[in-house]
Length: 178
Image (cartoon, rainbow, N blue to C red):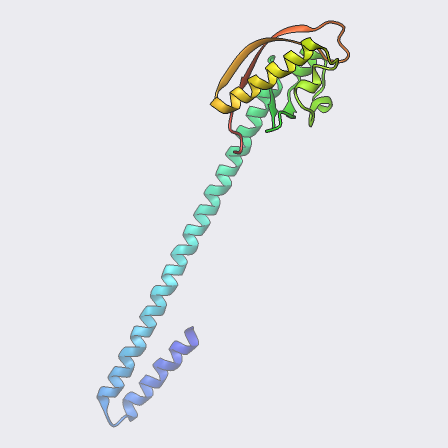
């Protein structure tokens, strides 16, 4: 861009002294100045734009680090909660579960991730467990349909436990990444 401007100005300067019509020389000089002004304005605009881009990148970096900080804080709160906290996918399979699942039910997160909720607690097919499975499935669907909270009582038992344990269960629909 700059060499072209210099050549135009140099050519205008030469024609100013050699041209038989001074008006044409002034016109060329004026056009050269206008071209130079437009280049300068464009250059200044690009510099301002670059400065804004750097500011946006800096703020995005700050927001990203804040988001990572708060994500870590939430993860720690859930992980160390005394309540069993877990997340299920649309087919009611475990995505994640906290330590309290092991403390209260004897199941590790690695044992349940990817498995349907009801399959982790109802193993023997009896009329009673069939009803319990249907009730829990209904409550899960109810929480999703109303996009809210559904609470109920249930007895849960995993394979290793000798006796079922009574729990107050509360499912709450939270749109995580929907």
